Length: 226
Ligand code: PRT
Ligand code: ZN
Image 1 (cartoon, rainbow, N blue to C red):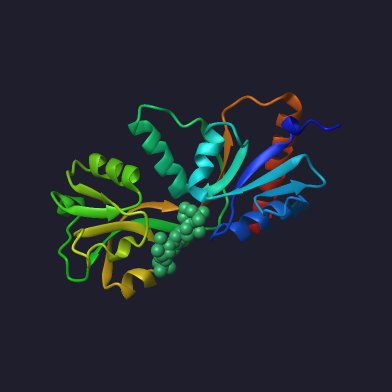
Image 2: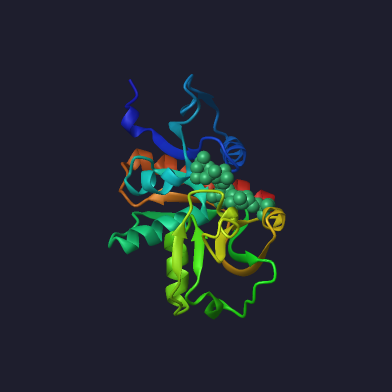
């Protein structure tokens, strides 16, 4: 019988903006899979590859801890995990392999319309609401700015109206969420798109062979799209 340990595990977002694109990309690589009843797992029928369907925030950790061999996730989430681990004195044990050309967005600082802003120094001494505390903390350090970071797990854009923050730092794609909340984008912190990450743990030769094969196919699919 086939050893389940020898199957490649890929962490994919369970339900969200990246899910359809991620599954579509893997199908284009020739992978055929069936979803389990609890919908947490996809079994690869024609390759020794299984998908774990999880929250996107868990993906870098699953790959770093070698629970999964590969993961498809936004660069914003990967970067946040890297900085969070770094702040704790740890190193992320995964490498970014490819950018996947979907899920494009940017992490930006925004302020209530009419707020004066003349560059990062305008954030000095201010309160900034975000879910991306480690990335923002690093950005402020790089710009020699001291500001208070207020953690919001979601609905960051309401923080200024609640009197909880002067600025927010959140993901933006079309900008319509900011506009609907009378907020104005003042500074891009970083650009993002979906990426594939790979564990740094060493794989058995047969597993490595399949990972290489899969990444090669992925590269082919991405080239065709360009
Ligand atoms: O449940 P789970 O934790 O897995 O999902 P999630 O709710 O954390 O993530 P999800 O599905 O919303 O987003 C997954 C990934 O998609 C993000 O990590 C980004 O890499 C990418 N992405 C691309 C975006 C956006 N565009 C985006 N616009 N993620 C979120 N947004 C949100 C943003 O936070 C803001 O609330 O959309 C709003 C702004 O959009 P616009 O178009 O109004 O500017
Ligand atoms: Zn999430």
